[in-house]
Image 1 (cartoon, rainbow, N blue to C red):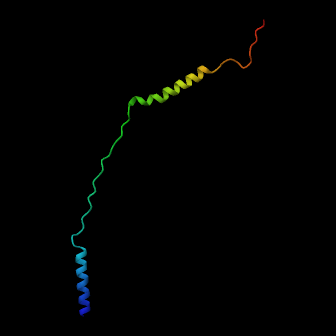
Image 2 (spheres, rainbow, N blue to C red; image 1 turned 180 degrees about the vertical axis):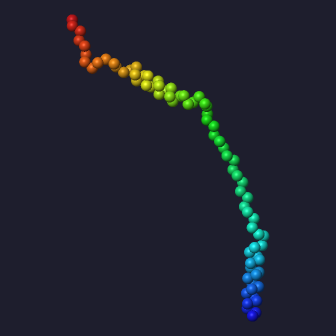
Image 3 (spheres, one colour; image 1 turned 30 degrees about the vertical axis):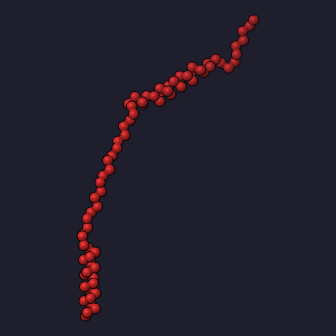
Length: 74
């Protein structure tokens, strides 16, 4: 009977020590959210304008003459 009482007392003493202080939920602080903004609202037209200039230059440099040379009689 003494062994059971000693085991019960030992179990009760360790259980109370394990729960001493209770449970406290960890505090988590939220990090600030950074929203990036565009550099400029007029930067959206640069790429299409350059593409238009390249296409216009390609059309202007295109040789529209036929591949057969025309000869002039002397």
